[in-house]
Image 1 (cartoon, rainbow over the protein chains, first blue to last red):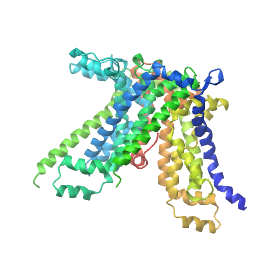
Image 2: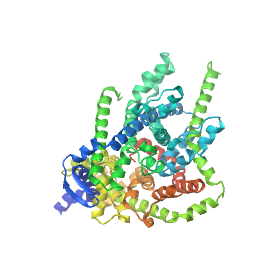
Image 3: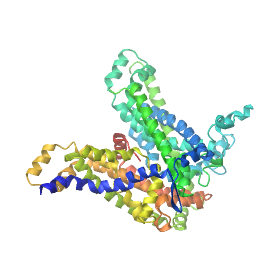
Image 4: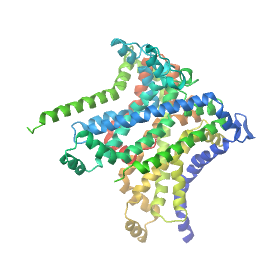
Length: 314
Length: 263
């Protein structure tokens, strides 16, 4: 009886533990070991040391996916902080219709990424899509959107006779279109997070600032921004991780093979997916997984360190 | 009127202008979706999309996967969270840390080895592959444990002294006191299963096992120029969750904002 009751807690945990061990811990650890092996459709062909990592270094498509991912994160994350922050500040206080606006902004958050991607593919359609129709109606030049491989800086500067090449050409318009959808989808969620953060700032601070004659910008700079920093930090980390993981948008809007026009929307997760499931090159795909994991880990550590200095926890 | 009242009014109007603009940008894609779905053929587009590929089957599959996954998650998570929250045993914090550590690693990182494990189990292209790996949810364990810990320990000790078994206490006292957090995890898990895409895309091949998201993505590739059908399919695919969201919107928004969700 006593032994039974000593063991009881483990029985409660067991069902969840088995699933977690078999379908999380085991594959996570396997992806590290698999990255040192030659493992393909024919099965396991032995350990190959670092050769998968060596192959990664000389794989131009892989580096293109890294660059595309960096563009994507740098484009999406700032917008996913600034736009929701602005909306949350507008919505703060007892504004009439607050919950109505919140519901509206939240709609894209609960809608599936696949359905959203199907809809935006139509909106961006160069021939008949509503966006180009609107542009044409306003007298503008229609764009190729998801099919446009040219970098946006190149597109903007070429009328001036400047033709930036390589990295300077910037992300393709196709990738920027994906960024727009990504920001559109996450705005509601981040707005709600910022709203919750704003509600935690006591009104007394604002009254004090008002009595001191602080203006709007001064109040924002000296009260809202520093006191909101834990939320901002959380949104920053979450948006970064979510942007790194983006898959459905890329897969549905710029479908395989290829990863968009000239591979310009081929992001790391998409490339990893192709290597693993189109080529069944598990060893190489695992090396890419480990690379992705290490990037995310490093970013989290750096962000935590920076935040440790800057974030104000009240 | 207070001095500066005019300025305040102008400011409020300005705010609403910007907020309405934001709302229009959020809503317009949905309106375009429905609008396009009703052009050239009207409601007939819906019938055609629905019958062109077995969307009924896809819905059924998604429903089966969502319900069974949810049932599994509720059982495994409440048991585990209950032990973590109320019982003392050697290795408790290590095990809890082991659970939490898996949340740090995003799914794409371990997708390929997961496939290998499933194929060793002979589960590729089965309901098992769609359901079993997701019948435990670490985030749910975490949320439930946080809540279970707030239930006074004296209540637990008194009940055990009265001869109430541990399992009975969980069922009769803990769960009824946790209705709100249970609804939160139920909503999260429904939304998560319903929208999951990468996993079912990888672990199933046959059309009989296709879930809604995968079916819609294939439909999108097959009918890439047939916008009216695509928008009809998108509309009926998104409707169930939009209806759920509108029905429980206060709760869903509050849940997201309180617990900050991992997808």
